Amino acid sequence: MGAMQILFLLAAAAVLGAAILVVTSRNLVHAALWLIVALFGVAVVYVLLNAGFFAIVQVVIYIGAIAILFIFAVMLTRQIGGKDGGSQNHSTWWVAALLSLLLMVGIVWILSTWQGFATELPALANEKELISELGKSLVSTYLLPFELASVLLVAALIGAIYVSWEKSR
Amino acid sequence: MIPLSWYLVFAAALFCIGLFGVLSRKNAIAILMGIELMLNAVNVNLIAFWRYRTPDTIAGQAFAIMVFAVAAAEVAVGLALIIAVYRRRNTVVADEIDLMKW
Image (cartoon, each protein chain N blue to C red):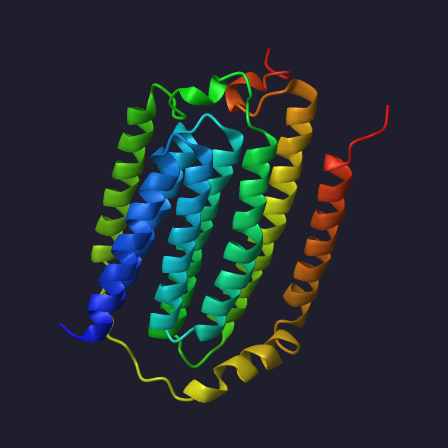
């Protein structure tokens, strides 16, 4: 077993363990902190996939912005009256667990019947040019989706500011 | 080396954990956290398929960038909605936001 495999298994175990704590933890601040651990583990997986740019983006956008937004939102909406004390999951959580488990089994079963399931790692032709190629493709081949994404972001941010604006009464 | 199947099984597990969070959590913010986990699983899949199946075309990476942008937009709007609901109804529990329930 090579170093890459050990690194992948460690990262995957950390991500999955942290993800389980994200969805089961009673304290939502703890859940948000475990979310950061899970996102960081996914960044490690991106590095293993030769997508270093995505690892950076993951850390900057997900951990730097989204996770912080989550922590802000949790802290802004805490219930002072002690409603936070009990379990944060429905009493019928086992139905959700069963459904998720069934979906997991189904996905793995479908994938295992696909002949490309065990594809070995192909060599990367131009490893050093990846980011510049991505940048060029974003302003040539994928110009329209790129512009649409920027319009979507502006619309979402304006909408978010408008929705959460406290109107003076 | 790591075969593609490891990444796919890992992403499937992460997606299902996120789905469990979405289905079983009471708190709307916690539901959004589950959605974030699911989006991350999708992104891992996109990058893994790009790396293993089509390493010569950049489409997989470009698509993953779009998922990042949509995820950021989704969280910004979602949390703003939750905070707005909290101001009006003083709760973020999804079951108690039932104004439109017949």
